[in-house]
Each structure stands twice: as structure tokens, then as C-alpha cells.
Image (cartoon, rainbow, N blue to C red; front, side, top):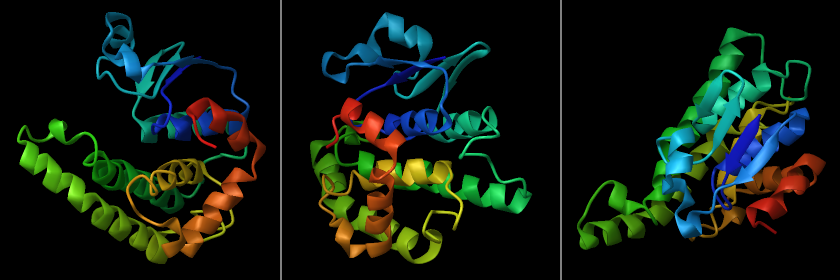
Length: 206
């Protein structure tokens, strides 16, 4: 498999998952600084022009929730084995889709407002709202969704790879992670994991 990623993006979540399961893959850095994600070569891999993308023998997979579940499904004996219970699996999907559809969108309003509007004043208003919306999202995660010590409780899962990735964005969004002691403790536990440490440097994260 070939894994396409860019530094300081959501692709960190899938990269961690690949390392956690010991997947056989090669990584390919997509340089956003030179707009490589818009190159003809990369658009041939992912026409969306975004990361992550995972090229498999059956084709290319995009979108973080899909990649995370695929990585877990193809490594059923790993630490990321998916819950067998349908309700538990639905809760895993619920959490990941909340991060994808709500929290990531909140964050993107800070630097990618042009996806939604063309007016600079509107973009400025979107940027100004980010600290509030991100804090509200993480308050919900802290109080209602993070069961501890891992997202789903005692069992480590792909949700943890995803939450850790997005929690790293809080400082840039002017939100103090220490407002959320359970989230902060979760991030600290993640940093103790060897697979996490192996990829943080590749993603420009100390």
C-alpha cells in the first residue's frame, strides 16, 4: 500500500493507525507548500486534491473515517480490532463522523474559509468564531463522548488516533487544551505510545 500524507494535517490519524497495526505500506509526502496536491500526478490518485489517500491493490481510499475503518478491518488481530457488537461499532462510527463532519469543519474555518465564501469580511468572521466552536466541540467530547482512558472506554481504537490528531490543533485555534483535563490526559497517553512517536516527527509535530 502507498499512503499519501501532508504535514500538520488530519492524515496523522491514519498514519498512526498504520503504525499501530504494523501495516505493510510506504509513505509518500504531498508537499502542500508547492501545491503538489493540485498537481496532475496527485489528482490522478485523489481527484479531491486532499490528504490522506491510501492506494491499495483494489484501488484508492480517501476520507479519514473510511481509511481508519479499512486499516482496522484488514488487521483484525491487531490492537485496533473493531468491536464485534453492532452498537459499539456504531458508536465508533458516530464519534469519528462527529470529528469529520463537525470538528474538522470548525477548524477549517480558520484558514480555509474560501471553501465556503468569497467575501473577506465573511472569512474574517468565520476565523473569529473558531475558538468558540472548537471549545464547544471539545467540551462535548470531554463531558459526553470520551469515556476514558480511551475514547470507547478500556479498549484502544481508531477513535483515539483521530481524537489525538485533532486535539493537536487546539493551540493553533486559540483553545487551551488544559480546559479539558480528560482530553489533555488522553493526548499525553497517546504520546507515550511508540507508534505515535514514530510518526509525529514526520508530521512536523514535536
